[in-house]
Image (cartoon, rainbow, N blue to C red; front, top):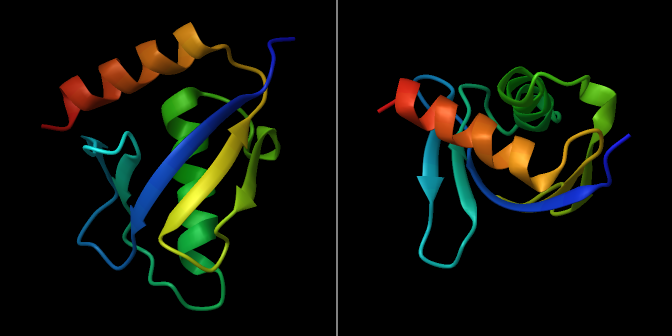
Length: 96
């Protein structure tokens, strides 16, 4: 099993659709989710969306910090950095 990878995110809840937007100037990955930030729904949708992008189980993704913030630090188990980068490139090329 691959080691854990830490990813810094900026999440925008309540968007029209789920979308991987790319990297911000500070290196955080910007992601829009359609769910609103009410009762943990945006975090739940974020986990679903990330599991779809990386083709892994939701249980492999953990919010390490920022559960109640737009800026989050997550850990992803079961993928290495190269696999993560390839999945992001592929998704970004599909969602202009």
